[in-house]
Length: 279
Image 1 (tube, rainbow, N blue to C red):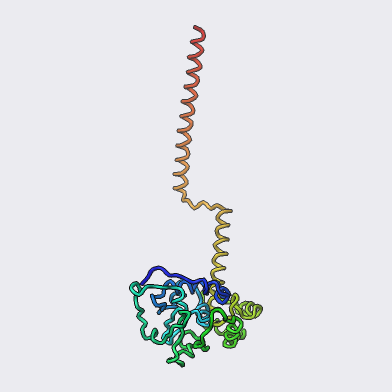
Image 2: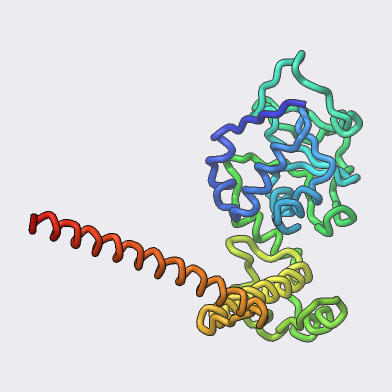
């Protein structure tokens, strides 16, 4: 498998791509770097977790047709052959031959599902908990972001405060989740995460708890560091203090002795010069 990958600006500089959150764009680049020579990835969820992306980022790539997904969870980069032009003698065939047979290549070299499999990928809820039609082919240059986001919003059901509290109590966290604050925050922003509408509120509740914990830990570390700098606590034992004091006295005595020797040498020189002058 090749170690270098290429990207075409016609995709990466399109409005459809640039309108996505930076975390989603980052995931797209990482998926491209880890894909095989035909653009297939067998572990997209693991890659997303590895780089700190959320499952919502992967879902958004699927919804916006930057990747195509199969029923077994394998994905393929839709515009792979637009990005990369590998010679046949340098290309290692994919291990996902069954999935490759289900694809056609359009005139612009992008992948699309073959008409021989019209009903294979209508529902991928078993793979990513996302129940929308993914078999429709979208033109990257003519994509309507508002329509895509509307489709997601239609699938997303806004939770109530009671539902959030019930779920928060059912999961294990090292610190309590402020459910009312969570609800008020996302209610005020229209249940959007950045520029994209929320897809999985339960995942955001889990992330919210981790975010609170991280902020709390950082605040405590900052306070502890400030206290140490102000107090400058001496953690030495009495024995260590005595040893340090003895070392200081020893160095001081050496310095005094050296100064005395220099002073005696200076006086001797003055006395010798005086005797010479008398002669």
